[in-house]
Length: 315
Length: 311
Image 1: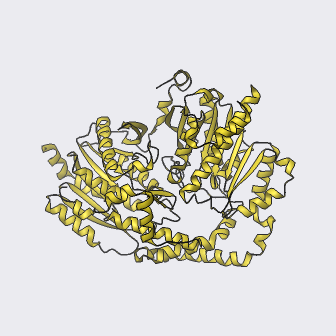
Image 2: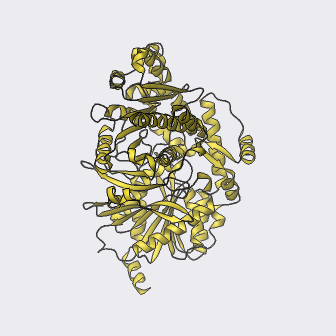
Image 3: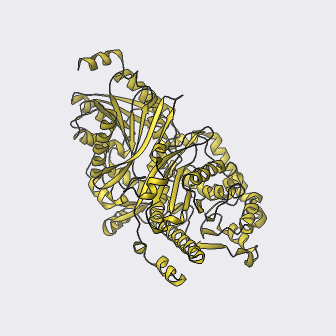
């Protein structure tokens, strides 16, 4: 509700929520949108000059979970800006209970994240008049993105960046990191099993300053990304980030085969990136041109190529 | 409202704070050759007319929300109490544009904060500006004092040394944790290929061992820049709250420094200690709640008192 003060003194503040970068061919606008009684934060990156846009594809980004946005925050912004400068609008948003969005962190379950993603697609499609949508999911956001494809038919493209295959193993890895951190700080340590018991009895456990709630732990426990890839038949890219081995992981291979069996296409790119090693203790923000370039290259080859343009026109 | 009543409000459970509806506005602030992004919380209540703005400053390379949304939670609570708040990304971080090179203790982002103070002054003409800084953000806030006037400072767990001193000070613990973590997973072994980093870390550990005795000398624990700025802060009589955990790397340094100042000069400075905790890392989550409560209590008490005195 706008009160008198806002009308008189902060009139026009909404104009400050956007920026224009003429040189970089970029327009950005940050705003809050409503979903299930919560205001979610979103930011829209779009090319300034839309003349070169051949077909109306937009990308919605699905963030990682817990401590990982601290590592990937700048990578996400870089990717969004690069894609927008090349003519692909991008919408980034924060799930309820995460980042600048409203709600408690407890509200951020896997199903709520999928629901928020679907709402973000709706908001994005309205604003940018899009025909088809691509989802770019990072880590746990990869699972959210894949599961959202089953509910939204406009999703034709999927980019999964180092997706988490088994959330349960991921959470256990985080719990082991806590033990290690406690050990290094010469604090009392408890076993991982004991931590899970605590999680079940008290409802949450502290993971490096973030509460991990039993709701999301239980919800994701039976899930596996390979088994979730049952219906998606669009074009997809799997990005595997490795420190020094170019060998494709078996799980990625299985996901790719499954998508191809569904009638879709799936490319796998292995990127050597020593900086991105998911260090949850020092969590340095990572910037990687290699990842951004890989996505752009895939987009140019698979979506924006002349043959694809003609098939888009035929559609 | 009496001071006792105020204290009882502050000491009460968080849910008992009066809640005022608020609005949040994302803004881009045009600076020289970059743009800063932040979110302004606008309260909609009785204290709003006081126009007190609280600016939240993070550690280097931490986005505006901070760990576990510490800043978001603090901003919303302050806003519900009637204060304007502003959280933002430093240049090259989060949504802000500009030089991507992260700031460090020798390269504080003072200009970013000056730009924000100027922007907020133009926008809302605040009667008071309070800076709340953690780690690098606290040092940045302190460095703003000679350039812009502010009316309160919350200085949380900031390093008291320069960049080289910090690297040496934290070397062994951090190196041990990092290396142990990476050793566990062969996929992370690529980290060890960075020979220069390995060498640098090793040198810091050796230097720390070598200097361990001299580090106990208070003069070497507080960088001249920091001590000068702190003395300037004390002389300026700016109300300040300094928060450290007893397990913080720099708690001893700050504690010794405070003891060297005459008590009567410290009338406007409160030194709060969180016993048995490391505030700097903001882990575990309950430490975040302790710090939030301390900040809310101090701001509420300090500035409500001032309002009563003015009335």
